[in-house]
Amino acid sequence: LNVPNGHHFIAEGIIVHNCNLVSLNLANVEETETPAICQTAVRILDNTIEITTPPFAEAKNHNNKYRTIGVGCMGLADWIAKRRLNYECLPQISYLFEEIGYWCTHASMELAQERGAFSSFPGSQWSQGKLIGAKPVEWFLAHAQDKERWAILADDIQKYGIRNSHITAIAPNTSSSLVQGCTASVLPVYSKFFYDKWAKGTVPIAPPFIKDYYWFYHENKTLDQKKVVKAMATIQQWIDTGISMELLFNLNQGVYFPDEPQRAIKAKDIYETLILAWEEGCKAVYYIRTVQKDDFKEGSDGCAACAN
Image 1 (tube, one colour):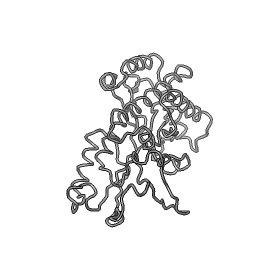
Image 2 (tube, one colour):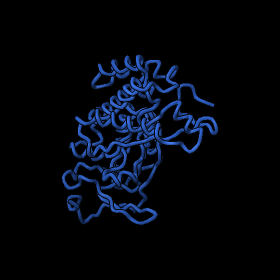
Image 3 (cartoon, one colour):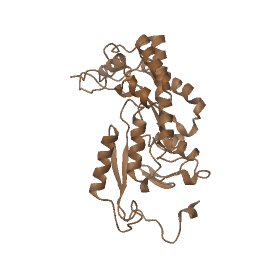
Image 4 (tube, one colour):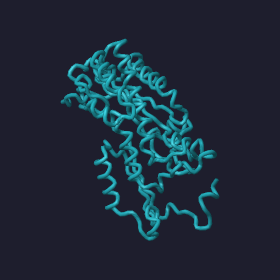
């Protein structure tokens, strides 16, 4: 069983998906570095397919036919804070991921020039002139901030092919971001400071630029999740696999309704947020988490500034 042009369907004993992933640390990336970093990431993952030995034949078969890779990102909350932005600054977020989507796709096209396209390229959506997310080039000409390069890229892919069937993927990065010293994935930081409980102990967590950009870290535990949905939908346009998006709902009174201090979020509000995610084009909701009643209280004797 296989989905035509999908290149990602998992069927036991026939096609087994193999994860070849890397994540860019946006906390440390400057705009001028994006082309080179994306090119390096794509080449690293394509080389990994060549030099590693999958544990079973089906995974090797998938690698050889589709050469699926996933260049992702972590530290978006840090990138936003450093630039004194917020998760409602959708044009800036969109252009960041347009850059990443373009340069990763361009790098895969260049690899196809050097090494050949993935073997199932003929008949694929790439071969039909479609680009990221199987969208036609006209979509990019209408929505991209740097439009002309997308038409050139589409022509080059028709000429040379593309090396990898899928190129970008954003993982949760909950553990790896701790090692990198940045915030996880592309979501807002849960809190400016908190303790995360693991099987082997408790880890104190704070974002890296908390001293200089304290007010620009927006805490997910009190952030309207519809704003998160719109930001993730903006990013999803430039990513060709589903983003591992989490939603966090605070069940305490007054968190989302400052003019109604006795009002708490209801099932209807959560439902409307999920419908918005579907309408905006989000591919999946990875988890829905909650802050339970009375587990979170802003102290009445202090203020947020006292933490700085």
